[in-house]
Amino acid sequence: LKKHSIRSSRKLKKKAVCTGKMTTNITETEMKNSLKHLMEKSNIYFMKYPDSVREFYRSPYDFLVLTEKCNYAIEVKKIKTKSFPFKNITEHQIESLLTFSKLLKRNRSFVLINYRNGKKKASEKINRAYLIDIVDFINAKESTEKKSLPMEWCENNAVPLKRMKFEKGYGWDLSLLLEPDLIP
Image: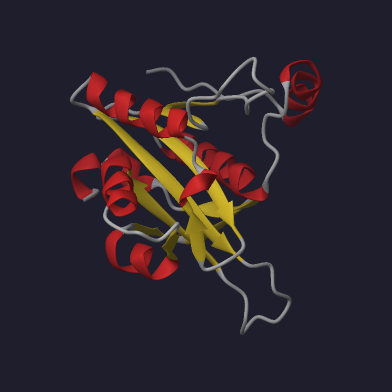
């Protein structure tokens, strides 16, 4: 695989005017930072799908990541509470992630949930990210009568991502994507 970079932020803004928003929330920006950092260290390719524009285009998921050992489809979500509402991921996104993971043996699909409350006091501040396999996400959704996934479930069942500071911004350590056998 060749190393490729996605468009510069200036081009992203121009693209956003034409086709809809590209990277709008801090969690997607930090995911992009994390993937760029990983790209500097290893041979990967990634792309950000544009977010849905009304009913004309429905984005299957946020990021496609190709590595030498595995391919990933990742839907990135940010939540300001300690519980993630299942309705925040649409059925077509769940179906797209599941379909992608079944296409090839080396494909994996994840939901990345960033619990971020934005509190000013450091003692009250929460900023944690978890990687959840799409099958585990579906099973969690179907096995509960609740309408949301509590952060406690992620602490016990998902892969926690280490927070990192990069030259330009923040993100998470995604080096585990290079070793798919290490991801439960």
